[in-house]
Image (cartoon, rainbow over all chains, first blue to last red; front, side, top):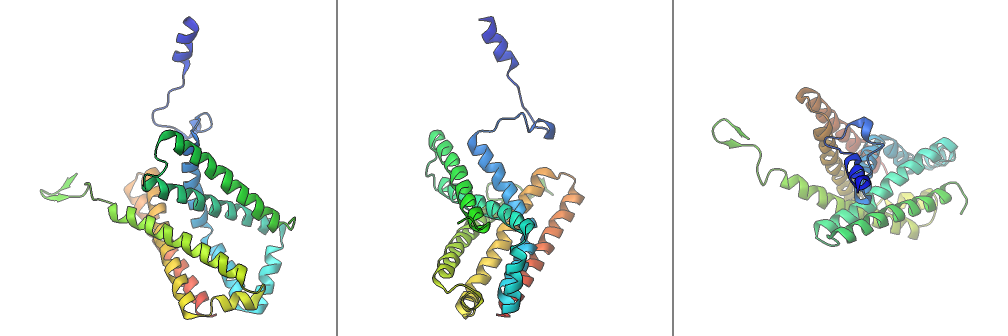
Length: 138
Length: 117
């Protein structure tokens, strides 16, 4: 009985989460999807000029298209592209979940947790596929 | 909160338009992504097929809608990030202005790229 009480007492309590507490704070799957939606959105926003530059190289001329292929064949660029691809795929898949939630589809706690896990699995699987394609494995 | 005796600056409708437009632009971007993926898979690989994809006026118009949607969608999202984490008004306003300028520059650049094809 005392152990139960001790455990209850020892439960960490978070009011206004401080940056230093983030690592110890265990988010539910929906919370992880939520913060990653924000992180991936910010990432895409910051890398927008890079993406438009790639778009420009791809369309300007045959010469610039060849240059794009040379740029993309660089290992470091591939790594950045993989991160961007993850950001895009996560933002897209999580966004579809949010649109469904807005329509009150899968609104109850159990379904929302399952769909949050599904978002993580699907976006990571798609990123893995894109990565394998990008690095020439498939 | 009231400013002056009448003007209500926070209320039930405040932000509804942005909330709705964030979702509308999201749907536009998802549909456009599907379209480009489908069209590029169907077209011949290499520069010619890719450039031909963006040559017709209707594709330029659709891409312009997508670019504008992206800019507005990103504006709402990034503005929300600043509003959540940056409390000093001056700094927040500065960041918001820089965000708008950043996005406008990106739109201008994308339009320029698009209409050169």
